[in-house]
Length: 400
Image (cartoon, rainbow, N blue to C red):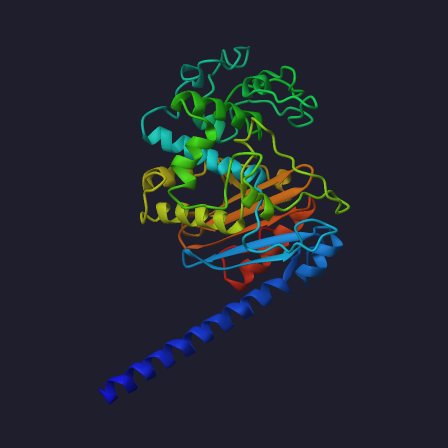
């Protein structure tokens, strides 16, 4: 018995020592990221400090989750939720996901495709009920399909001024799509022959929201909960506004270019393009699930075949539109690299001031999710990606 007790004691000591060593290694990685931001603007080899960049760019809060070996290795918050307060950003803080939301909408659509409720290459008007994509000279030549919408080649317009509406009134989803009062945006229309060029469009994803609701007979929020949020246990994520009291306490305020608080920028009825509230840790869990699906280790969202389709390049994009970065367009997601080293990217920016960025390397189980509560946070995200990629030896770690 004494020998058994001694053996157990030695084993526990070894485990404890190994745990401490691993924790120290992770702390060292975190410090290397915090002090090794890549000078993207200056294109130099000098390293920047995260805390300095937040101050220089008037970004009060940043939150990061880093993925390694298909799991979240660490998550950490920096700064404050709202300028002028003492409420700290933590790994549980939530932010507006902005256009990162589109990846969730894409997954819902592909899930419904697998269920045979809709087809990728059918005329979308075949499925829409209360509204149809208006026919014009461009749609006479080729019809709009889901594949074209998800690859931003459908020809949808880009309404100027976002999706504002009359004060004190809430437009319905159809009023937004039609550009009718109290919505102030331009109506959804096709402005070039579908499939002939690439043009990023928010309103095309709002049309997808209508399609999802009419196909399922449920609200978009309900469908998102059923297909993604509940199965993946994303408890810090929601598509409903106003938020629950619990989530509202953790929500980061948005901030303008000078770092002044600006209130939220979420639309009350159209949110499939940019209306998700979430945390970097929840985004990281979502990224991990997509990578596991791609690797054939999970089928919670859809099959490996569909994941492979999603991450297959449809077209090459013009690098001049992305600061010289070479990217391709997949279904609902941007792609970088080739074959074994392919990665997917989704970024977002909501006015008046929040940013979001996720990336994953499906064949390597690596990635990250970064969110900020300042409109200048996009540059910090790119600087952080350079640092994280360097520390974790990502393939093609730098985007520039």
